[in-house]
Amino acid sequence: RPNTTPTPGRPGGALGPCPDGPPNLLGSLYVEFRTNRTLQDVRNLVGPFLQQGGRYRPSSCVARQKVAVIIPFRNRYEHLTHWLHYVHPVLMRQQLDYGVYVINQDGDGAFNRAKLMNIGFVEALIEYDYDCFVFSDVDLVPIDDRNLYRCSDHPRHLSVAVDKFNFILPYATIFGGVSALSKQQFLKVNGFSNTFWGWGGEDDDMSQRISYRRMFISRPDSVTGRYKMIQHERDSHNDPNPRRVQKLTETYFNIIKDGLSTLSYTVREIRKDLLYTLVTVDNHRSG
Ligand code: UD2
Ligand code: MN
Image (cartoon, rainbow, N blue to C red; front, top):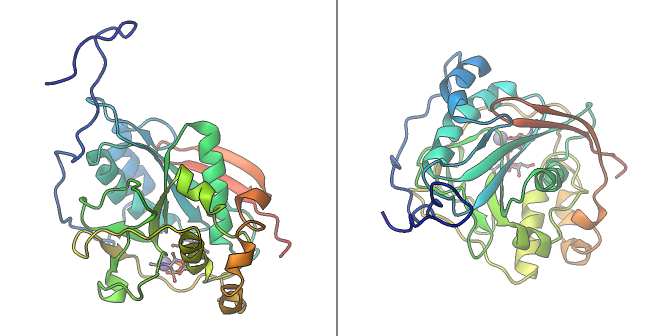
């Protein structure tokens, strides 16, 4: 094994970096949502490998990236249970130094997915020096563990082949579902817009921010990028945003004046479960 020369000050010798290709991946996975699995079942199963707050790092090597997985959330515990059950083991096999942050919108005002993801970025960075951010819907589970939850040279769209869309990319610029941006990439676009209240548009706004800042969307191939989405009805207080189409014509001008630089919220509670960090926030609805 290379690179096991002891380093001064580190007893027992320093760990080498993890290999670029994680060696223990399984490829395509069996995923089933029709079970009565509980959070406690998942704690029993994967908890022993985790630190409080849904934190993990490989013990045999130094992870190549420090990844915060950010889940925008309200009232979807059943989905979260499946997500944690399936995705934790995948992230472990991918040898990531990672943490799972569930950003929980308090109250029953209009949902704002994009703003929750901005909040997740800021709150995760307060805790640890993450260099990569994966933003994931709570209802999307990868069914191939070769789909690495890492960042690359360009912002990366991971959920390219979702069963709900018959495993094809619905349109070329789509960036919704699961996506990954490095800290630098996220800062370059000033994060997401904070002003998409209700369903839709916020992912396309980010896609436009990326191209206006001269970056591209990178993707895994359509076999590696397969996902199962947990079937659901539209939630209450998340009706389609009637302004979503109009707002997309304004992205270019809004990048610098609507995003991380103007983010305002109040943290109500931070609770560490073994499986995830729950950050409950008031996201200051004002328009
Ligand atoms: C699509 C996109 C999603 C987002 C959304 C429009 C894909 C695969 N998905 O998902 O990324 O762009 O359209 O906003 O392209 N949530 C809650 N509680 C709520 C409402 C939403 O937890 O009450 C969270 C949860 O993580 C959910 C996500 O927001 O997965 C997106 O909401 P959705 O699942 O209702 O939207 P969907 O499936 O149309
Ligand atoms: Mn969904």
